[in-house]
Image (cartoon, rainbow, N blue to C red; front, side, top):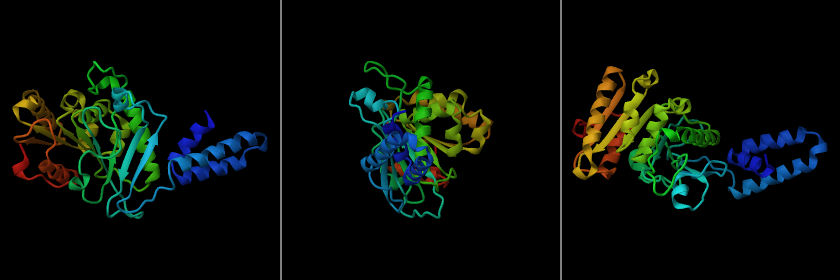
Length: 303
């Protein structure tokens, strides 16, 4: 592995990892001094390239880049190569002493660059949660093909999110799976459903709630709710009923999922976004927020 690659990996992991590397360099034989000097120099450059030490303080936002990962779906679709990014915003009540769940929202279509959440996150989780934006991944993509994330993309997505989120957990060591929520809109919802249909161990280890807005119903209906792991998780579906949103297939899938959830004792909530199509309207952000925070949705918002 090239010294620059090693340096970038340690730089992304934060100052503690860099210090660990430096201590290791000091214990290695001086016969390798030229290589070690180059590696140490690259670490310094990498730290400069990615900014100074990340400040873990209330309402702080920071980005992590992952040049070692495969191209994101946005890059594959646009042809403009940019490294995969994770953007995180700490809650306004963040402290180093507390434990904080994370709220991840994956966008639809090509998924964006991971530069920030496409929704006003403070309307969903005003405090307590670390808000995280991630891009989407596909194994391969051609412009004349569908961008839909499917089970063929499971390995690519699973590997990417495991690496990206683990680095976040290394940078912010006081996260907790308790109340942590992973979900998305449209193709983002498909991606989360693919992870669950693949019984992704990392995803199930770090998240206890999963939400799906206008996407992901098909993979969920395949073999997700029947697994024992889902009995200790929560699931939310949000779907539009306007004719242009083609609601009929989603109605049938939602009803099938409701029956499966009841049969297998899964905490499952299905909400119809009355009068809306393929979208996440502002008024339903508060509904999503109440559910993410563990509050019961109002009867008016339910199906």
